[in-house]
Image (tube, rainbow over all chains, first blue to last red; front, side, top):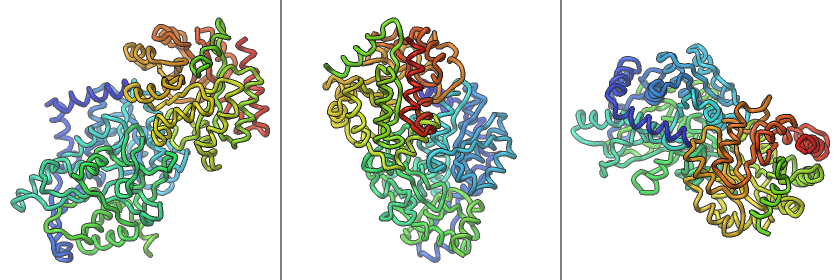
Amino acid sequence: MPALVELEEAWVQARDDKGYQDELGVLLRDFAGRPTPLYFAERLSELTGGELWLKREDLLHTGAHKINNALGQALLAKRMGKHRIIAETGAGQHGVATAVACARLGLECVVYMGAEDIRRQQPNVERMQLLGATVAPVESGAKTLKEAVSEAIRDWVSTVATSHYIIGSAVGPAPFPAIVRDLQRVISDEARAQMIDRTGGLPERVIACVGGGSNAIGGFAAFLDDSEVQLIGVEAAGEGLDSGRHGAPLTAGGRPGILHGSLSAIMQTDEGQIAEAHSVSAGLDYPGSGPQHAWLRETGRAKYVAVTDTDALAAFRRVSELEGIIPALETAHAFAWAMANPGKRDLLILSGRGDKDLAEVISRTT
Amino acid sequence: MTGVERIAEAFASRVGKAALMPYLMACFPDEDTSIAIGEACVEAGADLLELGIPYSDPLADGPVIHEAATAALNNGATVEGAFRVARSLSPQIPVVVMCYANLVLSMGWTEFAAALADAGVCGLICPDLPLEEAPDALAALDALGLALVPLVAPTTPDSRLKEIGSRARGFLYTVSVAGTTGEREGLAPGVDAVVARAKLATTVPVAVGFGISTPEQALGTAAAGADGVIIGSRLVREAEEAADPAAAVGAAVRQFAAGLR
């Protein structure tokens, strides 16, 4: 708890500090590639009969929105005088983003990754190592993201005096979900202004995929007070909600529970053991959800839906063929829902690019 | 006699020395064997037992206990089964249950407290329940005379330590090192200061755990002023590796007991 209090105080100070914001702003612009474009997906729009606008986070350095958070928190760690960074990663996107941020800022970096994910995502493991990070295999439980988060937290409680933990999604104990939201909010701050500039108004709906929920909370944040804008989070239905093999605690009505220090909708047994999630996309393969999403669901401000592995894989191909954009499998879930339920004017957060998923998609669809 | 009173009596019987509290995981490797392990601990001279309920995501535990929990759950362990283990052992020795918050939350504090009392358990350690979230738990357990045993770490600031210490029931679970459970070499540096600080913050006994894996470390911890020592991963490893888990754990506990007395 004291470490979390210290972190919260440091964040509140940094957030309002011009020096921090200026330094982060330059890094985001010149190093990461912000602002990202707003792109009108003409052929997909023709197909569905509505307007589909894409916020191109896939064009960022390292290929996903994760870099927004990694740079912001690495800079925060430096301000706090902590020179060792801990991170967890599932598919490796957050691990690579954190390794990049640490290399750039001269920080030591240890990334916890499930042994099973290391096997599945070897190129990202090599990328992190090339960047100077240590990739620590996690052998407990199902050897995937949930265990990697646990191991990172265990490291952090042992080394908190010298280390900072950069959590990759809008999950974990307070203040992490708030820090991640604040750092990812740049997505919707830019997109909201871009939509007004390009279309003269706000989108009818904002659509984003939700695992832990960082791109979605960042994509929703600036629209929360625009009550006419519908917010839609798309979770992984995996092999189907009825199969129990999915990653959709919000859609499937997951009971409130505690996972990794926050109280939110989680997948669990009647007894309260945390269940294993299943999704074709590693980034949505998490049995919990950010507490802010659970709250947005409770208040009705946002709606949560789920898309199966099969539909996401189909959308992955369709978007590639029609727009010349290979989306991350995570984002393909959002595309699948948007194409099946077209609106008049949708903004979709294209959270990352799909190069990392090629092997998986090809092995599943050929 | 209430649970709180039974715990107090167990510590009082070792005044001047340290009470010995082995940890065992309920239903590991299976329900009956875990009962046999608990009975072996009693015979070997344990003063209290910490009984862990297997949990899928035991954040405060190191690899040995995490693996044991995973194995127990894969083997069909349930919370109900863990309560059966508690019920078998509690007439023989004061039992303090260690359970992660989500399992408690799932049942509800009042119901969980009632189930503990029904199984004859004396108290509860909930490692991921922070002070801020504790009032409901404390009320539910106090009402039944059961102890809510809080944890403090070397990194806990003085002001917070005082507040936790003042609300401690049964004993104050004092973590000897920042980190998770698991065997460590040597005595945690600064354990004297950790114990002294804890004793200033509370009127209940101070029991030290995490990382104590040899009789020498246990004796060193007792010499530092601890009212009790908790031995966990070392014994769970015995239960995991030995052909006769109860005999192996019993032998290990006997060594710890001999060292302390």
